[in-house]
Length: 577
Picture 1 (cartoon, helix red, strand yellow):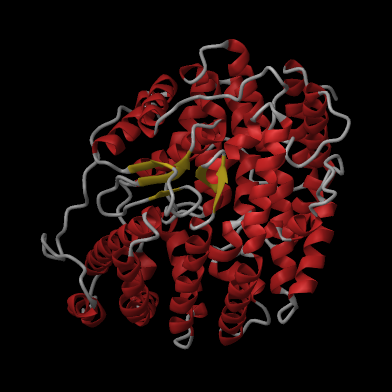
Picture 2 (spheres, rainbow, N blue to C red):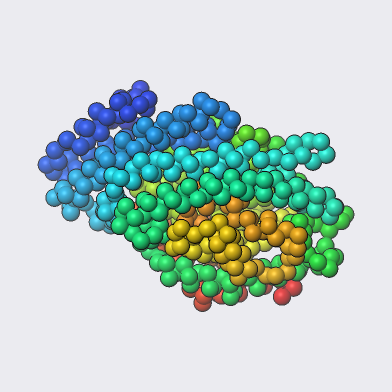
């Protein structure tokens, strides 16, 4: 499926006026009333009705996304915050009852049974699930939860430290942890730790407020706890809680030993007796930190070159985003933390947001978000917006696979072969080391949400227990016990998107399997990759993974298989077993 890139087309409106803009609920109400009242007397009328719903969803979704994008790009703007808040409080809650009514109308329509079962199965399954979960009492709670969750970005976006008289955001300061001078690394690490701990109580208070709302939502929907509710809401039809526990066990048994190999390799290269938390990303003295780019423009230009060498279709996606100003890459004060690719449903051209500071991890983030962007482009042709709302387990497969596929072309960033080797090893270190962290965060969430009403101290103690379970024990955290006990607070997902995290682990396993396939037959692997992403969410997860040429499998046996694939590659890179 090595298709040529062609300019993406904005969805043509046939229901809403061409100049329609979302302003308030009254501007949208007549269109929802039309959809709710319309008679459906044939399969043809049903299909047109679904296309009209899709059109409204695309227009509203793109408007909401722009409000969030603008707010994350400038958390200091009252205007941007107010626009986002207005949508969350005055528009979205009023749409939800109509969404419930339209879903019921679809399920009750006799012509629904005549729809193409192969194409519509995942969508109808999701509609049925959302109808069963919907509770009117939860609409204002979900709006309140969305607003509170955004406060995490406001609190984190305001964090900064001073180094040599200059102010740095947390993302910018992280580059000092790569510095070969150990005293500099330690000094900056101590400042980062102190700054994060300064907001410890504020973040605990925010998290407790979120937990209270989430538990109330779960109880309203008839669930004992938010974990069980969220599994249903996320549409985890293809795996269970028990599969997550199998993933935890597999990572502990087969991946943590690989992480220990990597840490011991770095420790030996550094020539130190005791590994401290500021040493895990460091290079030996005399080795300059990797500096793959200096500006956001340079990062995007080099990413285009890398993608072009992989496949011109991929570079066409990024070039279109450049031309349409859909990239905000550089870190600055007042910008929310993290990085994301935001699909924009009507225009089809997504937006990449990140906090680049000139580090190797920024290159990985750009490759990752670029993979998400390619997914947005490839699935844009799907006829309904709902067909493009693919689950995170396939979305993250798209991004994590792209990281590994692009590695052989990173000489666009690193002309020196030794630097290129270091960069590739750093990517594999990240791909492996992230799995124990994912298992830690996921297992922690299982405990948090199945123990409603727990205290801050109980939560802290359980965090330490779980963190120790997935730790190698090589790094000495003496003197930083309090910081380590509150280390979970740096994980945005816990605050903003609860339970959305194991998807990264599932997809990381899938990406390693995709890379194994790529090393065996590059063009076939890329064909399979593009074929799977083009399907959007018109197939089940297991079918999407099969189309990509890999298995959807969380078992210890499969994880061991992937670990065994990695070990010889580590040996090639000089990492001793």
